[in-house]
Image 1 (cartoon, one colour):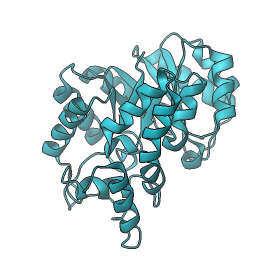
Image 2 (spheres, helix red, strand yellow):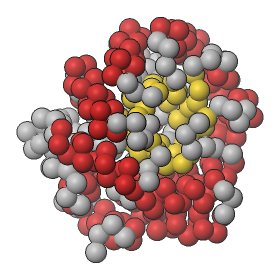
Image 3 (tube, rainbow, N blue to C red):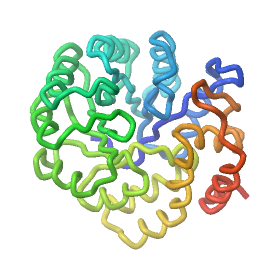
Image 4 (tube, one colour):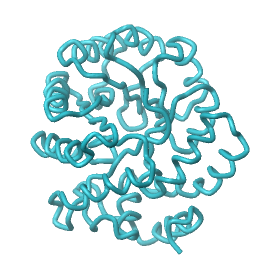
Length: 292
C-alpha cells in the first residue's frame, strides 16, 4: 500500500497547447528527488478532460518510462462511459502503470447501482489494481460509503480517493472497509486530519508546488506526530487554498510556470490564471518557501 504524498501531476504543455514531453520527464525526476511517494498521471490536475485518448495513453507511457520503476505511477483512467474507462485502463496496464485511478462517471448522474456495476465491469475487464475516485463537486455524482464497501470486496479494487473533504464521510469509509482498503484524501486542506483518522495519504495538487514539504507533513501525520504535522501544514495552508482560487489546474499550472518547471500552456476551455489571483498564489508560494 502506498502511503504519504501522491502528486496529482500536471500535464505540461507549450503555449499552443501541445504536450511538452521534456518538461514532463523533468517533473517526474523532480518528484523522485523530492521524496514524493507516487505519481498520478492524467488525473483531473493532468487535464484528462482535454486530452484525447491517444494523448492520454501517451502521457501515461512517458511518465512510466521516465519513472523507470523508481516511483509508482497511478494512471488516471476514469471516464463517463464504461467502455472508454475500460479502454483507458487497458492502455495503462499495457504501458506498465502500477495502478489506475478511476473517477466516478461525470455528467450522466448514474445511480448507486450504476456506479457499482460500472466499477465492477472495469475491474473485471482489466487485471490491475484500481483506486476509486469520488469528487462530487466536479462530477455531479456522489458515491456513497455503502457503495464503496460493496466495491471493496472486489479483489483488484484496492482503495479510494475521497475528495469531499468530509471527515465524517472518511471515517464511515474506514469503518465499513477496514484498514486494508486504502483511503486517500483528495482534499489538501483536510488531508492531515484524514490521516489522523487512519487514512493512508493524499493525492495532492499542492504537492506539485511543494513536494518535499507535503511529503514531510504526510509522514509526520502518519506516524502520529501531530505537532510537527500541524506546523508543516500551516506553511502549506496558503497553497491548499490559493491553488483552488480558480478551477484546478489553472492556479497550479501558473505556479509551476513561475517556478520555471513548466511552460505557460493550458487548454481551452481552461484559461491562464487571472491577474487579480496571481498575487495571492505568489504569497502562498512564498509562505511555503518555494519562492524567495
